Length: 567
Image 1 (tube, rainbow, N blue to C red):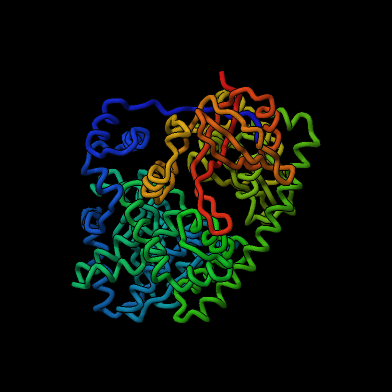
Image 2 (image 1 turned 90 degrees about the horizontal axis):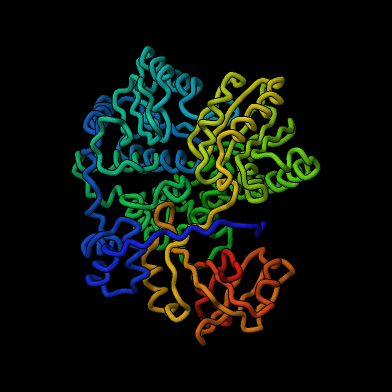
């Protein structure tokens, strides 16, 4: 697990860094990181460190927003029945929870629908539209899906049902015949921020409705903790409006949380302030587990529960689903690793494709990600799904797995996805040919360095720089996420004090010094690196800075990501 890694130091932006240093008077390494992240002057830095809700963009800048708002208000005045429809993952279920609660408050004729992952599949489903027909619902608000459902939305229209699509996935050339399409990625949409998640787009529609209905903006802000959960789980860039919404969403989650978020935190025995990583690793897996193992609608029922006791009842179901998910995920990962390790040909490949008919369909994507931790290469895990074989693909940095699958399309019944993750279905007798062809495509197009994990390093600093004031400024760069990751540093020519040692035979407790400054650190699964420290030669280390609390005492320590002998 702690094999060779590529170290990639982001080049310094000298002029911008110097200008920021003059303005901000904070450590040059932090000025350099801000410059790398597109912050050019004092004013931009101020908004980065002190976000303001009033700097959110006007929702009416989004194409079709006026149409969407007018169509919903028309449904209110005409006493039409409204159906809120969303996907079964975190982004979908939080979107539905926000929109359903808001609409229901002002229009009791509102219901929600989450498709069943295995019976209906991803996105707008025929079963969902038939449900609307049977229940006399004439307006469907689709969240986190719908942009590619041209035929199904056409079918709904022929049955007298209008759709409002709130989506963030890339549109095709032909758009669905909806009453309104809210998606900042549309070519002719002038909305300034393009990277909202589905729940973010839904939040913008709620904000626009508040404006039109002359409600205070705080009515929409009530959903910010759910929006933050969706942003964190959907791995969208943590910049611009996403960072702003997450910043205030975390304040809400820590002061007046949604009852579902509170119930999941309490059940997980979590104490302390929620940060983005808690949303990603504590809340999101439990919400996702509902759709993976059973029914995604349980997550919406938890988020919309009227009392804490009811939220806890639903949260317990999600908690159980997550325990089952973890068991399935770890047993399948073990089986998969044994299959690779027992096959010399497979070990040497540039890709991994594995198929076992009994594997649980809900966890194949997670297993693909786990396998990349061991064999760093594009990975597909397949299982039996009814009469067909279905699977999930995950990729490594820089390799477009969707494009590679596209080149194998003659062997597939269907496929979809994006650069780093995709899904596909095929007939059982095509598995072997697909496995062979995918390996050929990867082998011919992947660059050798893409098969070595990369650590992106923000700046070089010395141990003398690691002070409490330095660390506190880094903390103010939160919330962290893609394009605003927690900074990674390198320090060169550091020495073992003689006290570094292994912990539990797996981990490495570092005790290092540089120019008389001593600092401790932990390297998980790095016990095999102890020999580099024992010969008293200088080493270079790559790390993040974190706070360690022991017996009530707080101190700064390094979370070491890699170590190499100094050149």
